[in-house]
Length: 439
Image (cartoon, rainbow, N blue to C red; front, side, top):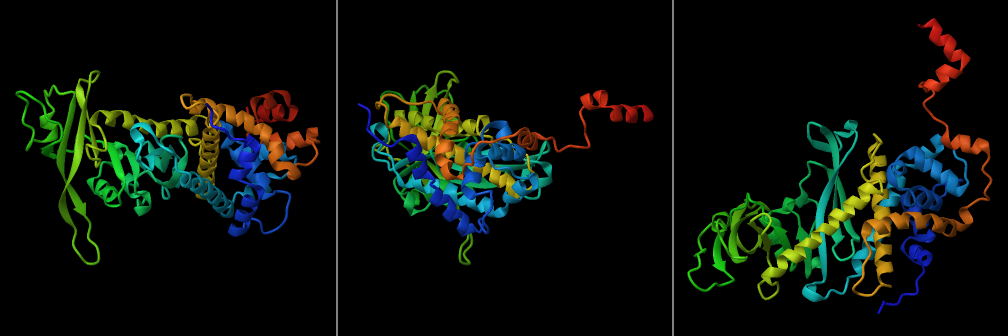
């Protein structure tokens, strides 16, 4: 049976971000210093949360949609001035609130995930920005002088955003987040970019768990075997993992391997290397005709070797999160040359996806346990349905509808006065005379 929940979509949306939350955040960051026709609630809801797609990340499009939905006429310069560092801080507070809300609501996991507090996918994505921002966000390729990296923690079972950070592309993935004792009992699914025995050791020390793919560049030595085989099986202890799996016919390899862990210097002490043993699981893949290797700190009685591959497939949830952000929510359309506006655009996309995924989780609560909703399909539907919630949400901030032709012209007038289109040169007499003189 479906799990009951009587909350309607508009009530649920207000529970995530209410007018009081937006106004309180605006006062805290100094965004609302005077009362004007550009209200914080109207600007956030109409110009940030409800704007999606390629045009949605264009600042001019944000202004047009703000005027269209709030019926407030505002000059271009006045609107641009509101997209300040204070507004960036306002969006940061709202995004942090959504992340805290998602993080404090831990899921009830069953099946092979029973016993874990949560399953979190950690990954990052790179977004190209204008080359003028190379000093702020340095790229790592000649064709990409400037690029930023968005680091995220995504809940694997729902796609909700739990944590984020914006850095330069050259910033190391392993340094982006701090894992503390508060994450005890959480299973982290990591990409190969996080192939750091030092990071795995830290996760193990705080009582959390890790499952990640082992890159081919890592060649640890086998020091123990967790899965015994009858007959004339190959002896693996003392061999390197890469050499041990060559020609190996076993469908599952389950061994303990020794890794070199670098302990950095602290309080005047020099850095050093230590040996740390982690479990390595190899699952034979018939398509690639080789073993896929996974590293974990989970004991054999906590994780069956055959389940490692299935659990790791949940890491694809973060790829879906980035695809949703770049295909429908405008994360890959960062057009400004001002760093704080680029951060506003990134946080706007993350706000939209956070609300979309949290609403998807709420909608799935009304489904049977064996049914689910596709994230891409839900995001496309939610962006359309959100338009219907705007009037209810804004309420008192909406003025009576009364757009004139002058108002529509003000919204859509091309600011590039010095670059008239060809049709003006052909149809306008003054342009034709100018062309003849300069022929």
